[in-house]
Length: 238
Length: 275
Picture 1 (tube, one colour):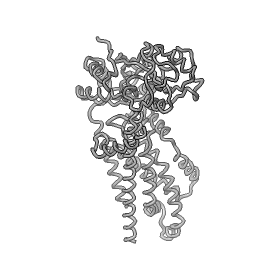
Picture 2 (cartoon, helix red, strand yellow; picture 1 turned 135 degrees about the horizontal axis):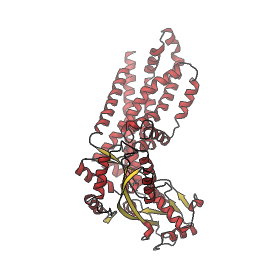
Picture 3 (tube, chains in turn orange, brown; picture 1 turned 135 degrees about the vertical axis):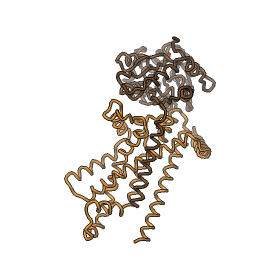
Picture 4 (cartoon, one colour; picture 1 turned 120 degrees about the vertical axis):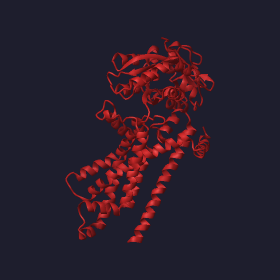
């Protein structure tokens, strides 16, 4: 028990070094599901967040409040909701999506969406104080204003997307229910960790946890590099 | 930046959809089963053999028997492999499942810390052993999740004439999770628990626990397989699912079950009726 940590490091190193084929499959599925979910959530969430920040309309406050509250949605509850929707007895049952990666992507997209909307709204609302005058004088309005502001906010938005990715890749409750943790089909890092823990294979579970952390670190690093590159280019052109 | 972002987004989506499609190739059925058949490694051993023979992929959703039956009732599965005879019979009677067959059996055991705090080691009557645990208020971890093991445990308590849930939160602790998680909890709390023998043998974090009670006929653990009723759920892949049931209860499947060994021990004993 005491040397579980040491064992975990050895196991993790061994799994990575030998490129264990099942591990590779699980890692790729984790990345595919969570990255797709984040991209979808960003495509939907960025514009909504910007609109909420830039325009006043009845209900704006309430929507903002609700979305902020949904950031605290427990993944397992969301998983249950998506299960009830996608179950053969549910309203979307005919699609036959339950226990597929698509179902997991749907659940994680819904999970990440409130975070992305809320962070986007806050970012753009803060920037607006600085940009308002310029935008008015240039007569930039409507859809173009949303696009311009999103473009100006791109570096902060990358961080918002990363926060979403962190929530997606780390959650186990939703993907367990709607994915079913099916080997070679819907098993991802977190559900594999839960499974190994339940088998009492604590060192292996911990090793998978280390690899998951490494994965998150890599994705974060990649986005950071991209942001730095984009910032540098921004300087050069302006 | 926008265009490159959009391009990246489209790429990711195509990738996601493409691979999703690829995974649909070849016939597959969904088996709602229990954690014991998965955690013991039995299904990982059997299913490749079945696939080699028929080309059918069996996707396993491993949950407690109660949840497996509920999922199947919702139509979220083609076949059931569970272990709670009374609940299975009720499921059949209500018309949610058809063609149930016995597949295999093993037994439940009571495990406790090596020091045997309840003084029940070697007892042959499981309910009497539980009664002593309750009298001495020795910590006991229950699945508490309506699984086959939990149903068996409740039946044993009923036979002992004790309602342990009145003491829930004190010496009687319900984890509400799978067998493995419950064994982890028992090992960590130095508590007793009821487990199926297959999960116990396969379990790698036994800590200070050991088997203290076994061999009571009441601890018999029968597994059954059945088809989710295609009349209730027309999308059930009846032909492939029946092929699986026939294989599992036929000579090949039965022989494979008998030949599965872990740490030198046989975990499941085939007993499908010969027809």
